[in-house]
Image (cartoon, rainbow, N blue to C red; front, side):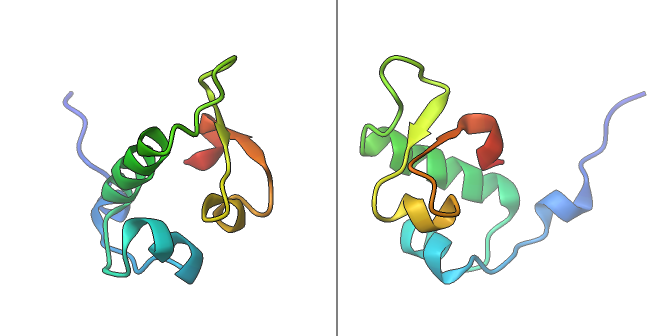
Length: 77
């Protein structure tokens, strides 16, 4: 039985002000938000070199991550 896409993940949502500083203010589906977050993380070299699964928050990401300085990539989704 083929898997169908969950419509909730495809529905564009308006990002918070903190997240909009990274991904833009226009409504986006969850998958697009994650893509843009990863592009930002890679562009700014924010993966921990010792453990690439951990993301080191800069000043823009810290509010998105609830004030944490580093999060596991699975916490991000």
